[in-house]
Each structure stands twice: as structure tokens, then as C-alpha cells.
Image 1: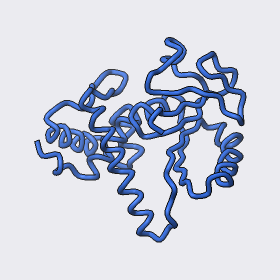
Image 2: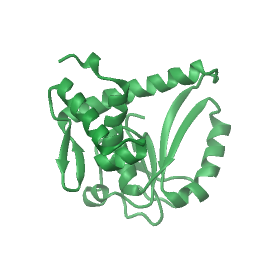
Image 3: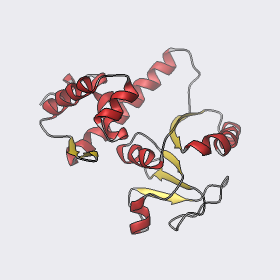
Image 4: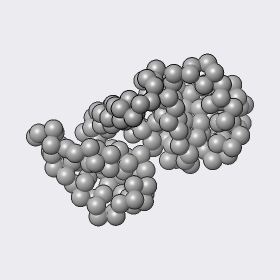
Length: 193
């Protein structure tokens, strides 16, 4: 196994499939054909010597090997993106936070929160994107997001009231409740952030 032979394109495709939860959705988000996505995943699995994605009727899930690869791929791609920003002449960033939000939060909660964040930490670079709660939860699990503002608590949080890898906490800009049925919004964060 020579993982140094894996292309950045294959890593980006793998991350997109893990975040989107399906080959089809990843193909659409990347502007690729589904067969091109399948070929990239087959090539990375061949090099890894293991199946990285469990194919199911309702989409895909990461295998144990897939979790190892996604954790490392996220770091590699973040570093490549940071290098591109630095080379393009952007000022040095204190760090990058990847934030996801549900559609109506983007119109109401997000602008004020981002403005406050810029005032309090002007060196922080925020990469943000919109998505449904299930898509944002998949992206958190896959390591594609650091924080997410969710419309509702994920089923796993409602069922177990806790998630070892995640912290649930209230947002100051919305009525949120941590680890309890949410009246309005949930904020989820990876514990590594």
C-alpha cells in the first residue's frame, strides 16, 4: 500500500461522498458524473487496500478505515487550501473554522453572528455553507465541518442525549437548549475544534 499515490482529486471526491452521504449527491456537488466519482473512490480504496465506504440502500457510511482516511484527508486538504490562500496574497489567518447552517439561519442568525465574530477575532477565517440538518450532521461526522447550526437535534442526540465526539451547546443568538429537545435551533461542534 503506497498511499502517497492518492491524488488530491481523489481525496476531495472521497470527502464529498462522505459529507454528502451518496455518490450521486457528491457528483452533483462536484460537477462530476457519478461514474467519475465511482472511479475515484475505487482508486482510493484500491490504494488503501480496504473498503472505505459501506454502500447501503440509504447512501454510504464510513467504515473504520474510512474514518482514518477522512480524518487525515481533511487535514491534508485544509493545509492545501491554506497554502493556496497564502500564495494568493491573502493576509495570514489565525485559523479556519468550517461552519454549516440550515437555510433560514443563513438569513436571520448567521449575518449577525459572523459580524460579531469578525469584530472579536478578525484573523479567523470562516468557511461556511448551507445545508439540511441531516447533510450537516453527515458533514460533522465526516470531518468536513467544525461547527453546525442545526434546525433540530439529530436523531442520535435525541435518542442518547449525548454524543461522545460532539458537544451540544446553546447559541447566544438563538434560543437553544443543549442535550434537550430544542425549542428552535441546535449548535453542534466537533470536540476537536
